[in-house]
Length: 209
Image (cartoon, rainbow, N blue to C red):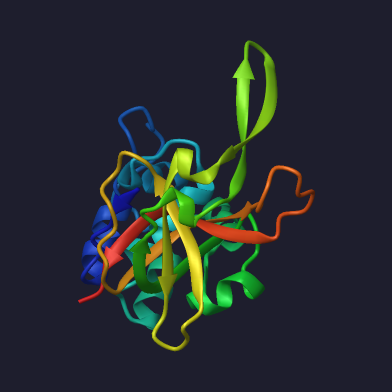
């Protein structure tokens, strides 16, 4: 999980994003008015995960007004425009996420997270891949073994939604923040065939000033 400092103005956004890519991207030019996948990957510290690139991009331009965001988006090259259309995050309230959220899609929400500290108060299982040589199998493990788990609520409703990030990273503050991640399934027990719950795996967060 990473804290994002969004671009303050359109000039900063374009300057950072239209960067020429990494040294081996010899066909990519800086300041040419076109933002490519390699350039977005460089500024986001990413290489192959296009879904996460778009999540980073959307959060990084989130403080620009609507017209300026559209201007930055228009500079994405043709391939990146298609990737953006595929992975563009939806923004929902925590109280809307369970019914309107789409599993495996990018999502952004704003609310106040509260860490679930007691393991006895929370039970849920996720499927994780286990790779042995060339063979990949899957195992059900308690989510609290892998993640720090929070309940997040908005100011409109008392309904809460689960969010989580990998253990070992900085804890989220218990104040109103914006978070971004990928919506995933959560099962209440190992025997459950169809997941009855969802949670947001948090990748980025930003403060709201």
